[in-house]
Length: 376
Image (cartoon, rainbow, N blue to C red; front, side, top):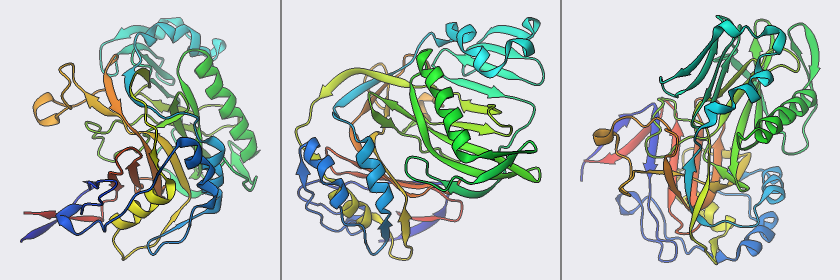
């Protein structure tokens, strides 16, 4: 048996595992036999805080377990999701959240633009706003903190050190930014752009001062939607529904990158009675990892990994169907599962999604230095 090692910017390995029989994964040996435990959703939730946290290749932070237990959903069906439609019509409702009336110049409103993502566009050379039909919003202003150095990462769904940063010459507490962004996201939700919350915040080095980068988690009926962002922009098989919000001045959105929009549950395809426990999900995750690195897991989520479905029911294939663009009305299929974030370092994110119905793990890595072993 021959193997080759291929350097990839995006590392995506799908390792299958039968939940009860524990069949081997890649090459029949990568995944050790796991007898996954299944419980009712309420028992799964009750057991979260008693989960074992030490593994050979992982250490789970107790704060991550408490944050997960506090936000755990009351139901988790297998579903069809549908991309939002006709949201370009809401341009006038949300425009003041990004561009104040005194800064808005009507002559720069361009109307509907078919360029993807298609939507209503405003562009005055400094401020750019696209409110897309698929529920996406893209906003740029004069200064960009994109690609700035990350100084530290702060998880704000738990107790955190409320440090001061310097934004546009002013001292500003992290808690002030969290409060402002939470209120801003609620206003978007109130105007029909889906439920969102802050996953975590990166403090950036920006022009000898700071900027704040808020990683935004979208949800559908309380269930997280995949926010793993592929470095190479390839979203064909596992679409990304997160958003990115940058702040360079106090209480002001400098950039909002959420062009991919959002989706909502359109149909329940199956109601499960039993789910893979968190402990079993972590056992499965551990069995997929190489033994040459120890991860500290600061975040675990529970939600959906949507898969693109064409009108004929087949999965999307980039080779035959072309690039996927999150068109309005697109249908996705999704089972509930566990998002185990091994690393949230920008552009080097590493995450394992464990399907809570089947026990199958999906390993998603962004790291240009990673190699994966593939069978010839």
